Structure formats: C-alpha cells, structure tokens
Image: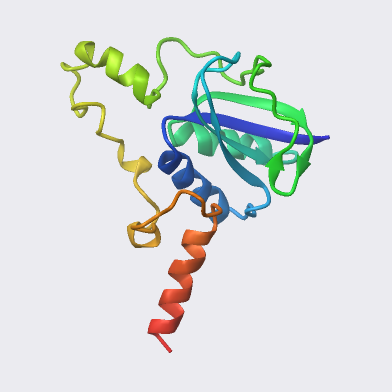
Length: 169
C-alpha cells in the first residue's frame, strides 16, 4: 500500500498547475495523477490530483495543494500502479486532512455559478475568474496552446524544454 495525498480542483488546468509545482519539488510524473470525479459518488464532482508520498513529504504535498486552492485535501492508503491511484473508489468517503468551514475556493464551476450572485460584492472576484497571485501558471509559455487534454501531465513541460533546447542549439 502506498501513502496518497489528494485534493480536489475546479478544473484540469488548475490541477496541472499544481502538478507542475510538485514536479518542481522533485516529484515524478509517476508520483502524481490527475483524474476527473463525476457526480453521483460520495465525493463532490471535480478534478482530483493525487500524489504518492512518503513520510514528511505527505505534509509537503498537503501544503502545496492547500496553497494552490485545493478543496477536500485527504490522506489515503491505496494501490499505486503505473503512475495512477489504481484502487481509487469515488463512492468511498474521503478521510479529510483539514475540516473546513464554508466553501473552499476555487469551487467547481457548477458551485461557482450557483453561488455567484452572493459573491458580487467580494473584491478581486468577478464572475469567479479571478485567482490569487500564487495560482498563476509556473511558466505560461510551457502550457500547450492546442492541448487535446490527452497529454500526460509532464508532456507540456517536456515539449517546452525541447523547444528551448532546439532554439539555443
């Protein structure tokens, strides 16, 4: 069994941004998995970023997820195979690390749309699109413009590095 730390994000790009931060801290693409969670299970819908981590690195992952705006941060034990949480069960209640009060930001798109009328008075948030400074991309030019959504989490960074190497050769 592997130790797993996971958090829910509103979108795949949000989760990919945090995955890049985990890669920068030494985690491999084989240690980080991004998956969609559909409505109807015990978990709220959204995008789950799961990371295999040992010892003190579990708290480090939880901190990165928290700083990146993840909701429902959880710790779990599970089977990790081929860079994926193999025995993930969306119908099983997560064991949350933090007990939160109120709504976590960023909420999944459906929650944001239903709650926007009450948010109009908040500074810095218009139409739920504003993000805190720490939630910006690591390197905007490293994100593929024409993404198919099928790339593995590290491929965009690999393509960016390859372009940089070839342009300097």
